[in-house]
Image (cartoon, rainbow, N blue to C red):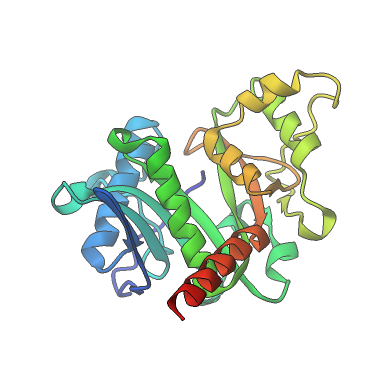
Length: 278
């Protein structure tokens, strides 16, 4: 996870898109509907990233107790809401979603501060950058993550997204301590050349630390954080090189996911629904 210390864009009204609603028991998944929703998601991010994970906020973030940057007013915010709660506390999970239009308005995608993502952005078709994923400790379980993924899959289908990407983190800045999972990702899940982002030269950390036969693959896989494993289960890849993020005390890798399998599943779902309703 990486953060750019930027002032909030107070003059820019957030763009809100009311696209879908998924209800599962006491929970729902939807996009932020107003400025209050976005503020609540920023408060959740602050609690998780800065209070729980001990990232270092800017003075402005600490004063507001919010995690924010210039992307927030323009992008979509996916929310998991506990319907049993009231107000801002009801938002227990969030993901930030950035498409080409937002990146064009701001001049770049967020990941471009760490990676050369031109192999992805130079391709035709819609792309989606995922980031700022977090879940409140009270709801940190598999059902909540599955709801977030259902929301992302619905969003991908709705906007005809072809490629998803974004930076995902391993905890800590000690490259040697993370040699096994980084080497495992490099040897087992490196993106094909045509889809391979590369860490910027001045931030590049070689992930090829241990030879392919120099570590225990099962142990190395267990050391990969659950979020990254989730991307890999979708057929995801990693880019070339990692990046140290001192503000968040993490080492970032760039994740790339082609959405063919996701959209195929949803096309089948909607086609069956259409036939059943005929």
